[in-house]
Structures are given as structure tokens and as C-alpha cells.
Image (spheres, protein in one colour):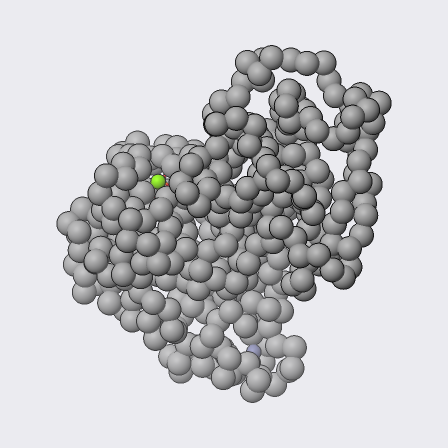
Length: 388
Ligand SMILES: Nc1nc2c(ncn2[C@@H]2O[C@H](COP(=O)(O)OP(=O)(O)OP(=O)(O)O)[C@@H](O)[C@H]2O)c(=O)[nH]1
Ligand SMILES: [Mg+2]
Ligand SMILES: [Zn+2]
């Protein structure tokens, strides 16, 4: 429940008039996630078509709006929280979400397939991101299997990417992002690690660098990169889902934590989860088949509970990582090893790209900053995305 008190406001939120009663089957409840165009319309239609979901007023079709009590979030985000006063509501966590419905799990382990109350989308900054895996929600039970999400709690952290000039929130409320790369197949891309590190920091989470498929390469070759990120202060782990190498350390890093696995398609995120927790049976696919463009084995973010405590969200592999809401001036701040030099540049607004008297560039020449990291920096500053 939202805390009562200061800053409470009333807001009129428009509702679309009920459409004629349709049977649930007409709505194709279970469509493939990939085929859904998540328009507000589709979402609204789903909620309103659920016969018992319509509790907006006793005036039936005539009323098109209702009063929702909202209040400013206590955090600095300025988000509004919907106040829900219903004894029928209970709290749960989103295990997975598509445009139209989500799986919500309660503390006691029951799962419900839920639609999202239209007002929740209306109040969300971006309807497409109204509900994501990891969210804590308040929902109303409709029957033993279904419910309606009435409110989403403010997120304490997120992992987002920029997608077609929109923010795409992948997961919320995680402590740490495990950046999974493979030593080979697909080829290791340090610049992608750097992007993920930025998006983790931006979203308020820690980053762990995990290099998988250690069995396919002489581990000595990976020492420089593991050493680099270790020195920068990031936890690193070298794993093989094939041989089980490094799995124990990874398990320890995940224990009791709320984590998300992210990285390109085919690096072994789902395979690692299966090694961490045998019996999980996350689908994985052959390297030979995932190389087809657009083929992703994991289709949407799915939260799985770990039997030794904590949970992990397995996510679909990404092809590119557009950074969301990062302005050029702040990029240097995410490169921790630049910090001692930034203040020494001749120009206070030095971008460390072309300026004379740049101490960052000098540090690169002196091998105090690695070329790979500086190269990542330049790519990010130039707005290039990491293609596959
Ligand atoms: N040799 C080797 N192969 C691995 C390892 N981990 C995963 N693989 C293989 O790599 C392929 C892709 O693994 P997945 O676990 O499906 O990769 P993913 O990161 O979940 O991919 P998406 O779900 O598409 O994002 C599968 O054929 C796995 O068997 C490993 O440590 N060593
Ligand atoms: Mg997968
Ligand atoms: Zn500079």
C-alpha cells in the first residue's frame, strides 16, 4: 500500500467506454510474445473485456473516468503512486511480462496470470514499460488462476536499453547485473562489456563480468581481460556451463541476491542457469542454429528463484545495446580509470577525443589506460552501437 500523507492528489483518469462483452477466447490470451505489438489499445481491450475486472463504478457504460488518488513518490523520481484500497488485493512479484499479460507470484509461491489495469499504464511514464520482470505489484485475484494488476511499486533499480529512441526497461529491482560474454562463439567483445557496465551503473545496480565457454579456449588468453576488469573493481568470473568450471563461484555470487543475466544471444546465459540449478531446464539452443539473425532461444525475460536463496532473471540475448539516457558529458564518469586524469586536461570541457593537452589521451599513450577501454569510450562518444 502507498503510504498515506503529504502530497496526496486526486487525478481524473479517463477510461475508455466498455466495448461489447466478448468471450475471452476471442482475445487470443496466449499469443507468442514476439508477435505482440504492445499498443495501449490492445492492453486496454484486454482488461476491459475481462467480465469481472470492471469495477470502476456502478454507473456502467456512462462513466468514462474515475478518480484515482495518487501521491508523489517518496524518492526523488517524482513518480506518482496509485493508492489502492482493496481488501482483495495482494502483493506479488512479476516473473515475466508481455504486452498483454504477466505472471505474478505471491510470497507463498502461487502464480497468477494477470492483466494490467488500464490506469496502471496510463500512470506509467511509458506504457510499454508499465510492468516488467522483477516488479513488485499489487493485484486483485479474479479466480484461482487469474488477476488484475492494480499498481506497480516504485522500482529501486532497473536495467534498461535504448531502443528506437525509447527506453526499454528489461528488468527491475535487481542488485546486480551479470554481464555474460563468451570467450568464443560469439566472439568476446570488450566494448559490449563496457556498455553493459554503464547501463548497470545508470540503473543503480552492481556489475559482474562473467566470461563463459572457458572450455573452448586456453584460459591464459583470458587473463588480460579478467585482470583488467578486476583491477577496475568489478567482480569477475570465468565459467564453463559445459565442464562446470567456475559454477561454484558464480553460485556464491548469486546467493541471496537479486540478479539479471544479460549479454548477446548464444553466450550461454540459459545454459549457465541450468548448471547453477540443475532441473531448471531453461531452453538452450545449438550454436549452429542461433547464428541465424533474429533467432533467440530465450524469448522474454523470466525470473527464476534459486533454491539456495535469491533469484535471477534470464533475458533474451541482445544484438545491440543502445545506452539509454546517457549524455556524452557523463560518459567519462563511467570509466573509473579516467577519473584521475580528467581534471588535469587543459580544457575543462575536454571530451578526451580530439583536444590538445588531453591528459586522458596522454594516459592512454603511457599505457595507464588500456587502448581497448579508450576505444570503447570513443565508440560510445561517437554514438556507434555495437553490432553483431
Ligand atoms: N562449449 C560450450 N558451449 C556452451 C557453454 N555454454 C553454453 N554453450 C552452448 O552455447 C549455445 C547457446 O547457449 P544458450 O544457453 O542457449 O545461450 P543464451 O545466452 O541463453 O542465448 P539466448 O537465449 O538466445 O540469449 C548452446 O548450444 C550451449 O550448449 C559452455 O560453457 N561451453
Ligand atoms: Mg537463453
Ligand atoms: Zn581530455
